[in-house]
Image (cartoon, rainbow, N blue to C red):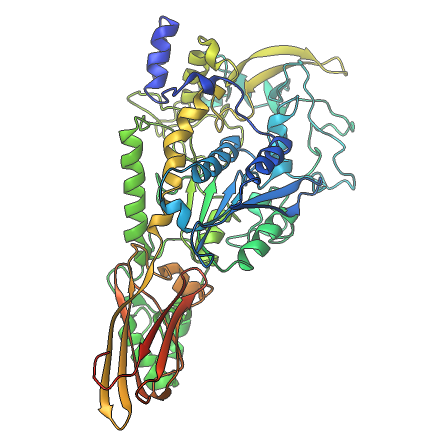
Length: 629
């Protein structure tokens, strides 16, 4: 395989090439844009001087850092839907924190009426402060883990063998330890990379691969039990894996995760969640559940037997409702009730009913990026990890949950590119990806790192970014000589400081417009007809003027989202209910509710429609001598 690295002949050419992916907006972006947890607290307190804001701590990390939440209240009515913004839940995406802070400024400094002013914002810029701290430390090391003690090597001690900066470069990277049984060698073609030896072609491994540091506890292992910790970004209850070092013992056993869950469930007004981190489900939409796309649903074997249906049979929801009503006495089962009965495993794919609005938002976002010149081909963002906040938000909390990253390494153009499907943020640049012919190749991420490392080295404006380091000899206390180098921490998740402002300007502005997609409840046509003897037929149409239904398809399946409820006061109800739940208000659609009531001339009838994340609207009718009022 031939890798074509673009090697600019001058710094000027390099800047032109680089800015085709990430244009610099102003010279203001060339300073240090990064805000540590302490900086965030000062920054949010300055925002807290506004009459529209409230600053509170919703919890704290195991190391005692407060989880600072800034609430921005709507301009008009206080009874409004809310948007929850979660920044840097993984602890590996400082850019997510900066995006959250810039979003605060975008909302508060908006000129004229805007969608951002119509909702309440709950913004948590740094959701995993312990895990993010390593980016701001004097010595950078791979972050993400909080301060919860974990005995990673199961020896009864905690944090007794951390990593060390052997060569004093301020970075914890990779260490190659000479070992006749090792599998690693330095690549002859790309000497910044360590690759696995290909024994079938006569290559022999020379090293084993470790994290930079000493064997502090003398057990023959290197850095196997550092301080902490658990990644709270893998501790949410959906698709959770129990008893893992990084994910914790059980779901929500970490204080950061639990604080976010408690806040969300105690604020039913939350109508949308934005996750600013490493995943981007607008550029890479989730897979759509195939079941139900043709209008029919396969019946699970255990259900088929109990319902006297043929195994493998598929029915429409209407047919299933008939089966459940006629054979099992269910009275008017709803779509969501039927769908829940068909569930066997936790949902992992998008509900087909949500594809329309999700795709529309994704298309709008990508068109905006294209207009702004931010559409250079880039490495794909990682997939959601198990126990992630974005999967919990959509699959369990049942609200639109949009995850965005803001930077990824530009792709390298070559004819035989090998796609990388990395699902995590681990340091994998030194790991090879063999192709179908068995030849040693390198991944797209490795190629991108090689190119970006070479390019940034030629421009002082981007000198704060470090990608791949050359291998240096270092001596351990035992006298053994090792090689230290490879991929720097945060190389694939965090851009040079000079690019931050231009990377965030357009996406953050777009984030502030997302409330315009939320459902908007309005009263439509109202018919009030006399049936004689003070009896009247009252029919009300309730409209949704927004492009997203309430609740969304997944919200129906979870039944977590409170239903839209209509209540009627001021008349005797003869037919219909005093409190009527509407299962779903479709996007740009209507639902009809009918009552038969007894009311005398002059009586006032009050109709109220409300749901926590829709707000509350009221309509008053006065019974007159004429029909139709």
